[in-house]
Length: 130
View 1 (cartoon, rainbow, N blue to C red):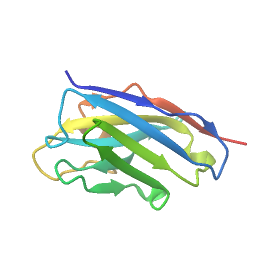
View 2 (spheres, helix red, strand yellow):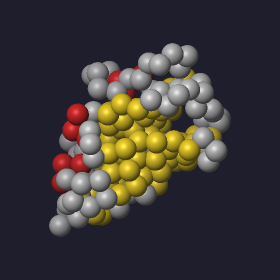
View 3 (cartoon, helix red, strand yellow):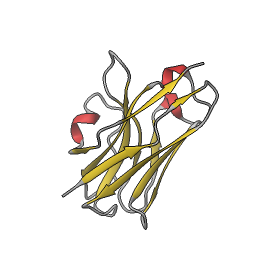
């Protein structure tokens, strides 16, 4: 049974940093592509970063390039999203997601990207405000 559980969301000031975690179970990273999405109030869920199966190449949406770093710890079956230089527009519920995959395909920024993921966590709230 595939499960994903996010944690680490908090209230943080602009310019601050935060690290989100996503504990996973029921699958191996050799067979699944994994991703971080976020959803702000009144907006659609959007892709933030994805990590390919196997070698774990990472990809980012333009809005977070240079500020966010996604990683995974195979031994701990945990994903991380290190977020630096946070901005108020980063405020959202952050989700991790997984999809079984046998190639380097990594859905992220296309309009239907979120629909390509099968498994989702419950989300964790990140609020960037004074």
